[in-house]
Figure 1 (cartoon, rainbow, N blue to C red):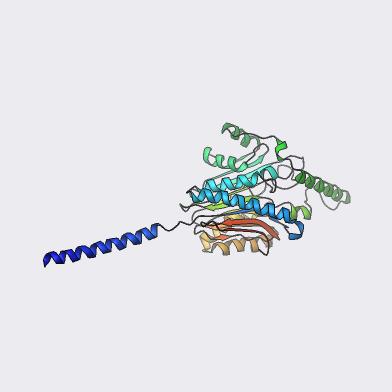
Figure 2: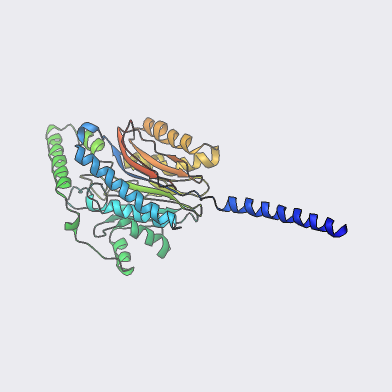
Length: 351
C-alpha cells in the first residue's frame, strides 16, 4: 500500500516537472524581438517630381539595405553591426546625400559627416568635414571604439583613419552629374540675389532649403540582446560654406541611442535640429516625463520643431521595438523590417 502511494506521488512529481519543462521551453523558444528602421532623407518629395523609375530605384535601394540589416540581426548580430552595414549601403548609392551621392560645397568639393551611438554603453563616435573617406559611418565607429574621443574632424579625422588602416578615395569618386548641376543652379540663384541685393551670401534659397537640404541617411536597430544603436551620415547642404557642419555628426541632435529609452536618427534642416537637440529631446521626454515613443517623437518633430521653423523628420525605436517616423515635410524616404522579415517602405506623406 505504501509502495503504491509512493508510486502515485512519483507520477505526480514527474507530471509537474514535465509541465514546468514544457512551460520553460515554450517561453524560451519565443523569438526575441529585433527590428530595423532606416531613412534616406526628408524634404519636398512629391509624386509629381519623381518618375516611376526613380521612385522604384529609391524603394529598391531601401529594401536592399533593410534586408542586409535584417540578415545580421536574424543571425544574432549586434545592432551596431546592422546600423553600420545598412548605412554603408546607402552611402555607396548615388541616390542619397551621403557618401557617393553627397552634394557639393560652395568650393566644388564634397565634405562628409557621420555619427554612431551604442545604446547599451552610451558610447558614441562622430566625424565631420571628411574629404577622402568612402564610408564615414565606419570611421565614426572607429572613433567610438578605437579612440578616447567622441568627435574628430577634417584632417585630424582622416589622419586617424590612416592610422586605423582605412583606405582613402579621391574626390572624383564622389562626383555625380546630378549634384554638380544642383550646385551650379544654386550658385546662379546666389549671384542673382546678390545683384538684386535682396539676400546676402549667407542665405540659402527656399528651393534649396526644401528640396536639397534633407538628403541625410540613417538607421536605428534593436538586436536580439535588446540593445539599441543609431547612426546617421550626410553630405550636408548644397553650396554650404565656411566649414559648415549640420546636425548629423552632433550626438543628441542628429543621432542618439539609449537602451533605457530609444534610438533616434534625424534628417532635416540641420541648424534647427542642433538648436532643438532633437534626438536627445525625444529620449529625455520618455525618460523624465514618461511619454511613449510616439508621443515624444511627435511632440518634438510636429510641435517644437515646427514652432521654431525647422523642417524634416526622424526615425526612432524604443527598447520594446516600437517604431515612430514623424516628419513635418511633404515626404521622407523611410523603411522598416521586423523579426519576421516584414518590410514596410514609404516615401510620401500619405503612406
